[in-house]
Image 1 (cartoon, rainbow, N blue to C red):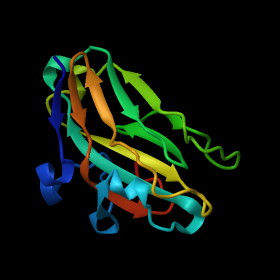
Image 2: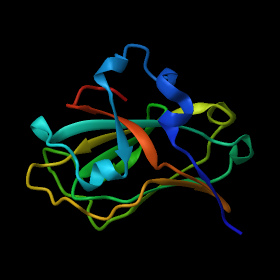
Image 3: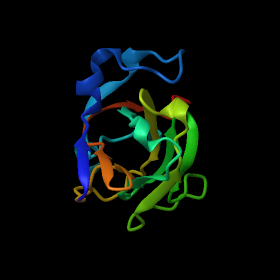
Image 4: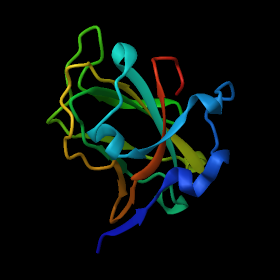
Length: 165
C-alpha cells in the first residue's frame, strides 16, 4: 500500500522557516501556492525566478534511494536540495530548451544529516515571455519505497536570477 504525507511547507514551518543560506533577506520572498504558481506564473523580468520550500525527510529514509518527481511546464528549471544541485529540466539560457513533456526524476540517498530535520528545496526557473500557461501540472513528489511527500501548498517565490539557493 502506498502512503502519502501531504506537506504544506510554509504552513508547517511558518515565517520562521529555516534557511540554507544565512545572507538571504526573507522580505524578498513572497508566499505563493504550488503547483498553481506554475500553471499561471507571474511575468518575469529577464525570465528568471526562484521558488523554495522545506520538507522533513523521515529518518527511516536515511541511505535509501529516494526520488524527487518533478513535472515540467513550458520552462527550464534547475533543482537544488540543501544547496546541492540535483539536476535540470530542459536547458537554461543561453541554450534554452523547454522541459515540457519531459517529467524529471532526481534520485538521491539522503544521508543521516538530511533526515529528521527541515531541508530546503530550491528551484531556479527560467520561463521566456512566450511560454504556454494554464498547463495542468502536478506538485513535486518525493518518494522512498511506498512512502511519499507531496510538495503541494505554500512555497516562497522571488523574481530574478540572484544566487538565492
